[in-house]
Length: 158
Image (cartoon, rainbow, N blue to C red; front, side, top):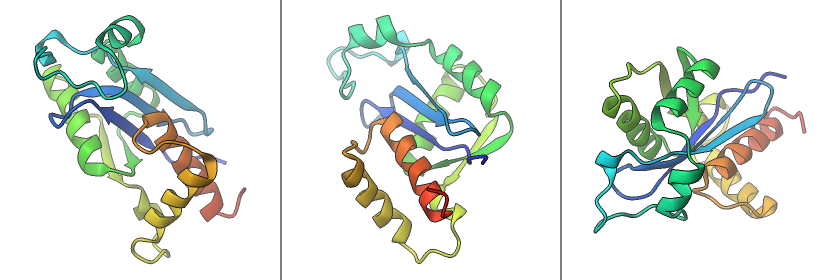
């Protein structure tokens, strides 16, 4: 079974500062990476990095350009599906713009993959699945995992 390209990006603040990213591969595997903040992004007085410390991101994260290269290698010129298109789009746009990379993916709401569902049904099922699996919303890897499980459930392939 080929899975759609699901993507989620964790942000550290209201400025769409990307701190972690995850995406699904066609075989259902998940890639996850912390993102090293660019020095131009950092304002020590206003710095909010979500659940991560600056030291963690600097030592364990990939450079933003490496993240973009990896994403491009896996998903060039395709539509990726997200649970929170506004936040993910803003964070991804920041990566593309700040590093002068021409966008090579388009984002779309994940619920558009399921036109037979009533409005809001996908969102409710997603929320229920987070609880059932004991996962945390807003964590990029958990978001992608839930979208993959929900896709299998909605396609009757559990």
